[in-house]
Amino acid sequence: MRLSRAFGKTLREAPTDAELISHRLLLRGNFVRPAGAGIYTFMPLGYRVIRKIWQILAEEMDAIGGQEMWMPNLHPAALWQATGRWDTFDVLMRLKAGGSREYALSATHEEIVVDLALREVESYRDLPRMIYHISKKFRDEPRA
Image (cartoon, rainbow, N blue to C red; front, side):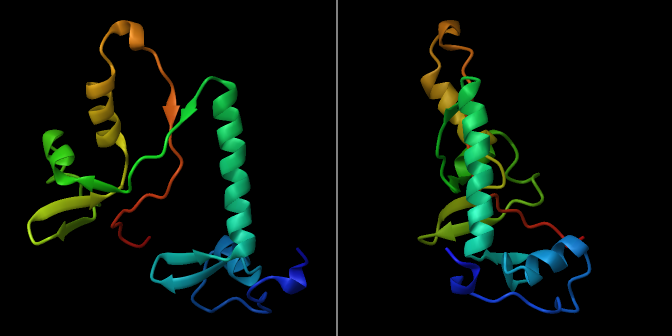
């Protein structure tokens, strides 16, 4: 695709609130656009870069015997409560559905992996296994 046909435009000047040089370059180069404080839309060129990075990671992990999985971004609160991190993981984003069902947005997938291992690993012969997951993480972190 020709750059002239890309959705969005490059900027001559970065917005004044962009302090870091990397942030300024990503904005000026039409890789990302802000949607809110700490929330960004990856433009087609930026998303293309992300996909290439994911592809390299997947190829390298597969080459050493890794098995890629896709885990949910919405986790039942019960998994986090079982590990004791529901009340102690400060950056966890929590939500309620249907009035009473509680969930967390994936800040990490450790709880999901532990739950899977408890259900899938029956013997020491089932180990070791190398699984991996590439996805977004959701954390309510203070701005730096």
